[in-house]
Amino acid sequence: MHLLTIIWTLLCAAIIIGYPVYLIKKSPSIMRSHEDTPQSSTQNTVELLSFDIREQLPGWSFTLDVPQITENILRNNPILFYLESENSCLKLPLNNPAMGYKVNVYKNVGKVYVTFKSIKDGVSNFYVPTWHLKKLKVLIIKSDDSRVNGNWETGSNTSMIHKNLKKSGININDYEDVLGYVSNIASIDFKGHFIAKMPTKKSLGSLSSKSKEHTLCHSA
Image (tube, rainbow, N blue to C red; front, side, top):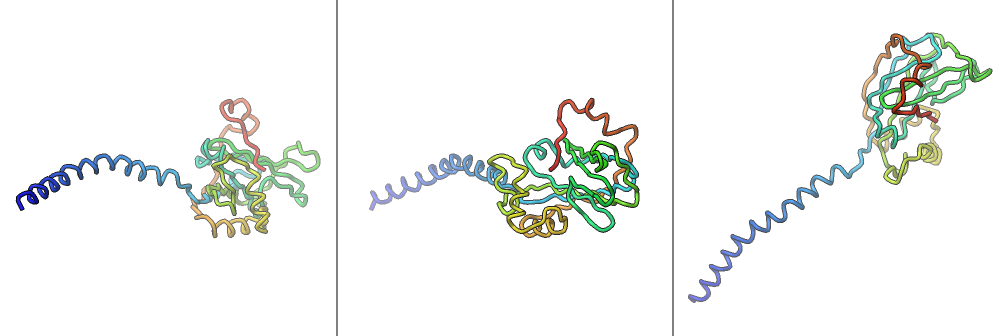
């Protein structure tokens, strides 16, 4: 009986001493696992921004400040641009034979540049009247869902979203069609509606001398 008491006492002592030691050794790995989990998960969202561009017209170009376009976003995520007129909202770049112009869009870190050129020669500036256009809408895709964008962990491919939307029967040129489709897959994070003010003493033609660190990216 005395021997059993000694054994029980030693066993209790081992548990009392050993368990805290086990917790101390275990806690760093638990913390690392807890910290890694949210970082490794991809944010399944589509950021939506809307810009009222009427104050920048009439004109052959306009510039927007878009701080959501970071260097990481520029390199790794597709960005879709849609220009809204009186009766349509179509993807850029685009040709508008009825009005006689074509539109190109370029993106840089924190900036978006849109130019209008004559369809006749593709070079002459086309001055868009104020009444014709209303908004530019920007969709920043932050989803690795294969139904939208494939797996961006394996490297960016800006044509991937075009292929996947076409495969799903979605017209990428139709803003409402695209927005309705992606909203069923990812969360739409509406960043707000902004009024694009006319910049002072700035023009698209002077960009080449100012942009040395980053090259303009043509959006297709």
